Image 1: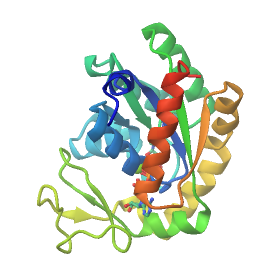
Image 2: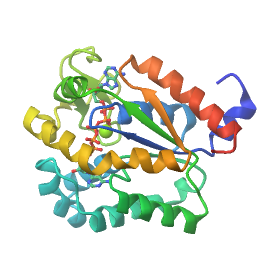
Image 3: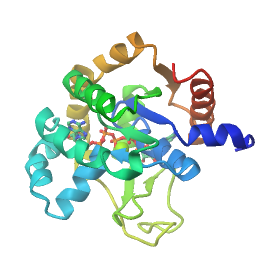
Length: 235
Ligand code: AP5
Ligand code: MG
């Protein structure tokens, strides 16, 4: 990043991504994490990793994830808070997938108030339903939890079929990325998560980003949005 003073300010960013399943939240968060070194808190990734490790709270969430539904607010809020209070979040963080309901947004507000770490910017990645279905059903992810790189069979294929370019790990499709479950996730998103767009818009924090372009174009808009948000003190 060209301006070192701005880079330092960006390191304190507290950012939230909103968007439908497959809108590119995880992809963009990974780019931001690599550039700014901020922790990326993806509740979906936390749950999938916890299930793989046999953590009881995450195992309780499995049936909800597999059916495309949301994990109950109480359960996901406890799981999320355990991660948020770790020391690496004390300066900045990138939230992906929490909050996903109005009660979760209110819990997040209370947690951040208590920690004195208010959110600075909220990015909403706008992508239409047809593209969402193409992206999710074609997604492949690295099963190595330390890597977790995301690919797409057409848009972002690995160099060697089934193998992660970065760590050599195996690439797999997520269990909840089949067309029927994606349709359910999209329905749940519209009913329960889309109201957060208005919630954060009313707080003057929301920036809409056209997510239906190349990863590079989307990322460039996010960086510009982040710069203006940081320059104006977060609002
Ligand atoms: P989660 O894992 O968060 O899934 P999601 O929100 O449905 O979002 P995705 O991860 O599917 O999409 P994404 O926006 O990250 O897209 P990506 O960058 O990978 O949650 C899973 C489940 O956990 C939920 O259904 C729920 O059950 C539970 N859960 C999680 N949090 C919860 C909460 N707070 N409350 C209750 N339950 C909760 O991109 C998708 C694909 O598109 C990739 O293949 C990628 O390569 C490609 N792509 C990305 N950007 C572009 C681009 N610009 N151009 C072309 N292709 C692109
Ligand atoms: Mg994701």
